[in-house]
Image (tube, rainbow, N blue to C red; front, side):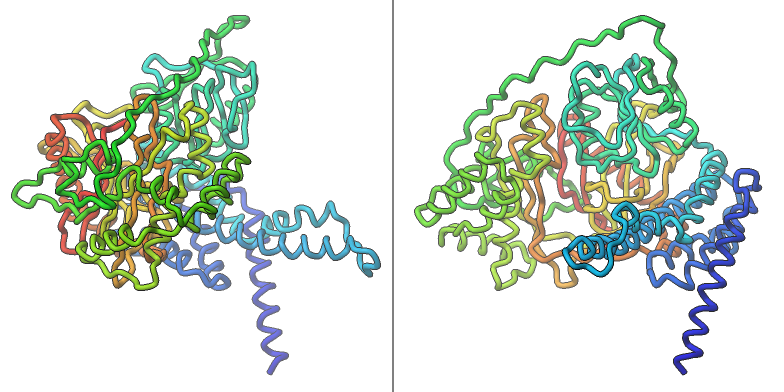
Length: 619
């Protein structure tokens, strides 16, 4: 029995090798677009036989429905079909690269262990360290996932062309008159720009979405595979600093820019939303005045905390004790139940400092001070978890949580969530951002907004005034994902449903359909979320949104999303009705703030009810 099982496995390996060899002989660059679709189908079918991955299976199902199934009633190569196919291909690209990365990591771990064992005295086997140093990466290149990536490289530009999309996606236009700088090719954004490089046009390989943009960089250009969401931290930073931030799916264009390393160019965004450039005049030095070092920000010291925790009906009376997230929530006045606001309470400014100065926390306070002086940020965050909460604070928070209606675990895990928010004051990106903007540690304070976590079927962000270069003044940009908003605001891989929605009967323009492989969902029994609410989110010249953590009491499950029957993709009536409802919601909330443009985060419940979780002035 063992023999025939072995033979079947060897036959499977041989057949996969044969298919890979045949695929490698193909010249994808000279292949017709329908032939590319056929080759992709064969490669995906082969992968499905040897990869046990639910997300790959869902991606393949969506690809099959669009190519050999009913295609949702759309004609092949129509603009709408091409946009759907782009979403399917984007998901497959992310899944395949993730699988390849995991294989490379696993094999490299084994290679590193072998190398370490071989370097010990008396080892019977001494492998070549140079071979083992890149063993995982080199082996992963031989996987069938690489062939899928090669095929997608030629297929996706055809799909973008069919969808009427240019190669560029601009999330920050920079200065209206364009920007000028010297081209630098970088793997990632540095913490600080080297002297003499400013003004700099950074052509990077990747972005995570959490970076700060160093002074002196006037533009950041990157591959579409690493595009960032409009509400990611780096996108907000770019718009604040008037930095051009754009991604491109045309490797040839990015290759042209890389070849101009060291050259001075002028960049602008044309009326179609594409990035264009020209070479600066030879010998002409680019004008650049480095921004002066930001003045130390002075923030009015908040009063002593009026209570350990404040219910929402008291937010208005204690404005100086709360962050903008809490206060803006209290200013929302829904009429006729157009939308809901979750039951909310806030642990005000000063409570963390009061707990830290409590007599029971003397040793923790002294140790934390030492760690901060030594800039050991990870250890400092761990030290915050050692704090003991005073009994009165613990009792008041438990009462507030119980009133919110969500279940409260009896193991005290809510304390871990609260302390994690406080500890996020010293995450690497938060510390780096404050240093760059010259914000002293003692200026930055954290309140904590506590809410029951919404059972979201969908999460949304509404930019009531679209930041896109091609938008009309009264257009809104609406983004929607399946599940909770963490996958939207944290810049997780993949795209959201993104659409421009205007007033009246103006046609809705869908820019991208959702392709995020995984969604985040509320625990079945429900839970609370502790949201950071810093006084750094409302400081002039300092965008602190997204710098500090929000943490759920019970960890939220992640899981693959099946878009095959998802109405956001295939039910036009449902999609357009939802987008128009969200546009109208944005106008209602904007009017609530005297017409000031807003970034609104919220959830759509399975009942269809809209819930606004926060609204803040748009940046």
